Length: 114
Image 1: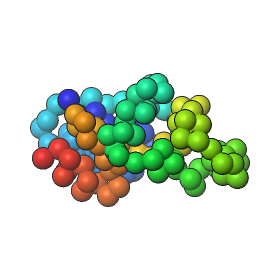
Image 2: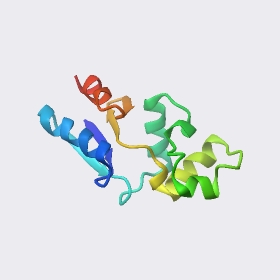
Image 3: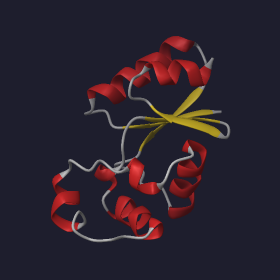
């Protein structure tokens, strides 16, 4: 099952959702700002992305700059920060079985679902 971690206020996330809608494939929408992923779920997504947790952080967010930028954080602490402040999570993320992409650019989504 395809899953998109979506923020309706984000233009890139809306573009990703539109790609999935036009694909004709079944998918699930997770509005991650409302339905915050668990530590296990976010860790699983990061593993599917095959990246370090820091690479999923929106480092331009004021929360990151104010609370975390000057700190040296472990991977677990970075994941915990994203759970505490889900606005820090890059978007959109599309997961297809055990593979995932951050949908920037949106063409990455097309490659993942085809």
